[in-house]
Image 1 (cartoon, rainbow, N blue to C red):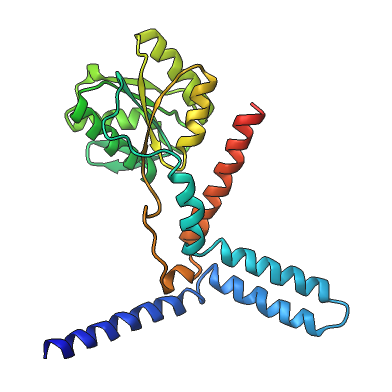
Image 2 (image 1 turned 90 degrees about the horizontal axis):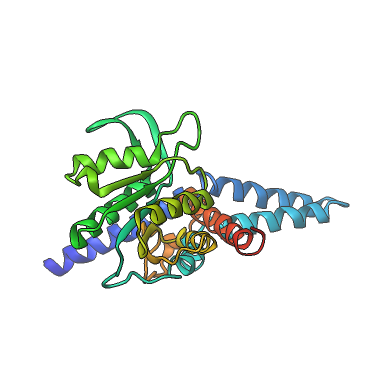
Length: 266
């Protein structure tokens, strides 16, 4: 009887995966890929429109590849694994970089909250603080008029979680990663910190390290906020187009471009 029920569970799970795969093609970006493929077939049948057909087909293929998890696992995964998580990081201060804040929304202990990635970074920072009793430098300003001040909101959250105010330093002017490094370096030198542990999203860490190197600051990289598995597997849904995955691959491309600019043009 148990074997019979187990078989039905497996069939049910398989059907769920098939339905999820099918649903992916009626929502963006899947529906756009189908439209582009339809246009490619239509143009191919028309005289003088073979180039348009080729362009539509290539665009559909690129959009598909950028929208599937199988590609994101390799692209973003490779970028995120640039630095391993150190087992016992050595440092005298934890530097956490902001990455977005939402203004004018009610949080548990005040108004304004951190976005998803900096919230994950803050959790890692708090855990490191409790493990090693190190002070924290929060870096990040108010990027747009309708976003929150990243460092100030992070400070409020840390205070509510029991971190003493004298253990928190705030750099609230920076609007870019380059400014994160520049203004943080000023505070590090002023306060006499020489071995910062740098916490940011794993995909963001390679560029952040470069920026701190440009400021003459050697850091211990500590990746947080991983977006893909460290041991990815292939299965049906990994080949279904997904808007979230498209965003992940877009972030990867943006980071690679920004790393190039930081390394060679700044």
